[in-house]
Amino acid sequence: MKNNWPLWEVFVRSKNGLEHRHFGSLHAADAEMALENARDVYTRRNEGVSIWVVESKHITASNPENSGELFEPAQDKVYRHPTFYTLPDEVKHM
Amino acid sequence: MKNENLIQYIYGIADNALILGQRLSELCGHGPSLETDIALTNMALDLLGQTRSYYQYVARLTGDEKTEDDIAFLRIERQYKNVLLVEQPNRHFGYVITRQFFFDVFHLLLLQELQNSKDETLSAIAKKGIKEVSYHQRFSSDWMKRLGDGTEESHQKVQEAVDDLWRFTDELFHLTEDDKEAIETGIGIDVTNLKEKYNKKIKEILEEATLTIPEIKWFQKGGKQGIHSEHMGYLLADLQYMQRAYPNMVW
Image 1 (cartoon, helix red, strand yellow):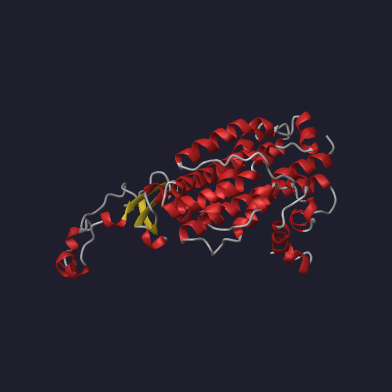
Image 2: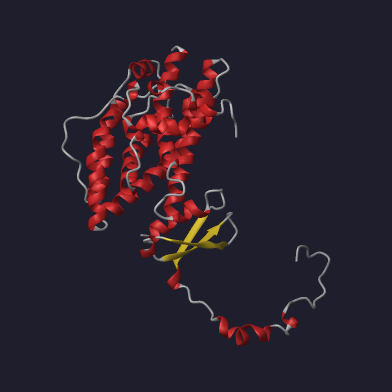
């Protein structure tokens, strides 16, 4: 029966104030079942306080074949990191 | 209230959790899908966790060297006071869900009352269990609706399970002598008062699931007196094997 169920991606927020992060995927017949399955599969060891599920087909992914044009131009542009500034001592945790 | 009565009263509640937990544990690695397998074994662990709290309390009440393991593993069949419903075997997924649903609705109503018990330990165990059992009821109710209102085959299978298991539900509301004594002292819950709410909830979910309650007049009973169905012996053989073969073994 699992073969008939669509795939869902699961995002879990581990603590209030943190963002939801991708935890994995699972099969479920609908959104409600996906939430319950996510609760049982991914938060049984107290990993989360909130769950998002989205059917995998709704995610548009970049094509690995296009990696060259998408990502390589950024490799030699270190000046885009804000590391060329002198930080005042009063600014901590940067 | 004498300790012996209190102990028997606790068995009447705790043994249901142990035996249903054992039944669900049998499905570990055998669920119809990874997701439902984990869900069912999570519920098994919830129930076994609740069982431990009750048995640890019983071990304290007995005052001798008895441990929770002795209570779980070394009683003989007649000394287990669980209802017949929870010992029924895992015939198929729809059967497992129906058994779970019939028990969860009762279990939640019971714990909601038990949290007002005059016995502080029982009240605390009940409070802790309510959240777990609320989820069990949500899970099994949702699945009743999915299966009942699903395909022709799932509807037929779950309706057969309802027809087969309904005759075990009346026993949930029977009072034993120990129950009556526990009620008098304000420790026990009068389960006869839960029946109306129980039937209402069952009816509501089954209607949504397009399932019907069979019209039967004769109900099975006996578990609460320790008179079990033929399935119980096999279940206990599995449950008790390690402790009988290797006395006093621990994890």
